[in-house]
Image (cartoon, rainbow over all chains, first blue to last red; front, side, top):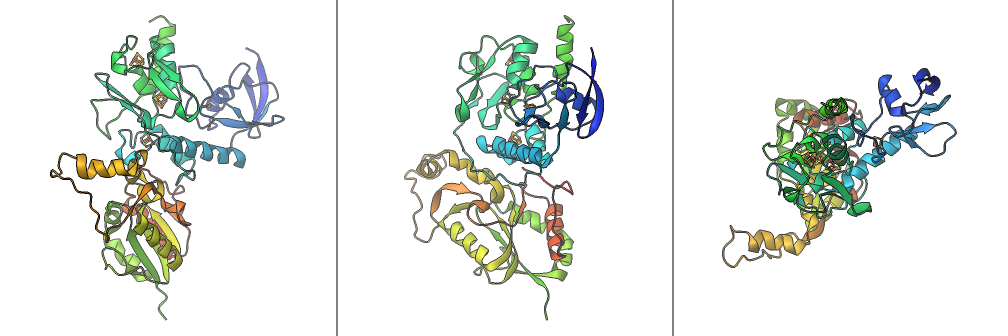
Length: 235
Length: 182
Ligand code: SF4
Ligand code: SF4
Ligand code: SF4
Ligand code: FES
């Protein structure tokens, strides 16, 4: 691959072309907040947390889906970006029902950690408080729509890594929901292999095993990358 | 002249857990007492919220007419309001009834619940507070000056915030890694 010169936060970098801005930042220890990005599966640019400023481009672009180009001038932590990150985080909390104190993921949740990172002390927007279903029909696993942030990490892991295609998405806007098979209870799925990968991929308390209680959730999203590597090698 | 600051603590729609956390300050309450008087608190007495309070620490959300009037009064009579705990800040457990119509929630508690007697009468004494349709956090009703999330916030966090304010410094929870939900 050909090397190109780019500038990130006033630092001059020689990087391989064809990489995303996110990859380059992670390789150079430049912090980018992400939520829908998961190592091992394709990026979709859903959460809008990884937005960066690029000189000459009016709108902010997502670092996970934008590739570097020669002489790009990128900024990752301007006041404008920080403001958007905080707003995005608050909206993620406001859209569904996040009551951390009674959530299975309390203390082990990527969304909570994101809140701390963006210094969120409260949610400034009115909360929707939608009535959400909790699907407990699977013998071992639970899908709690109250805690889902629609990152679609579960959808991509199930299709790209496991190859089962159990999860997909229905509706749009605030009515958007993750569905199992053709919008049927998870326990009745004819595609789910009960591999449990989606549980590890899920950043919040939306997908979890029934066999655990609060404080014991042990998600390992990093195994997805390993599993994908093995899959590519045909193992 | 007494230069001590006046602190008040109040519990609105909360479980008193945040006040338990205040008590967990333990002997550090003596450091607070050197700099401030606690003029109102569930652990002090039950009188009306006094005038001229410097720091009002409020636990719990606004769930009823009574809470609504109380927080308005607190705002009028205090220089500084600290929202203490997830319920005060983002409704937390008290907000879980917001997904349902109020009457359904009341019926569930007083009529349908298995633990009730046969009639399942809904409490309606005029002295009781009137529940609002939706529970809201403090900052949706009044201006809040400082926010401590957490269910409950730790005693360390509460003491840190109090001590900074009493020494005329502005605390910063992010800076000292004390932000916490749940
Ligand atoms: S999913 Fe995370 S942020 Fe949401 S309630 Fe659970 S612990 Fe809190
Ligand atoms: S358990 Fe495996 S197969 Fe089933 S939905 Fe999750 S990722 Fe897909
Ligand atoms: S269930 Fe979890 S992984 Fe799937 S979209 Fe919701 S938050 Fe993301
Ligand atoms: S991580 Fe890039 S949009 Fe979510």
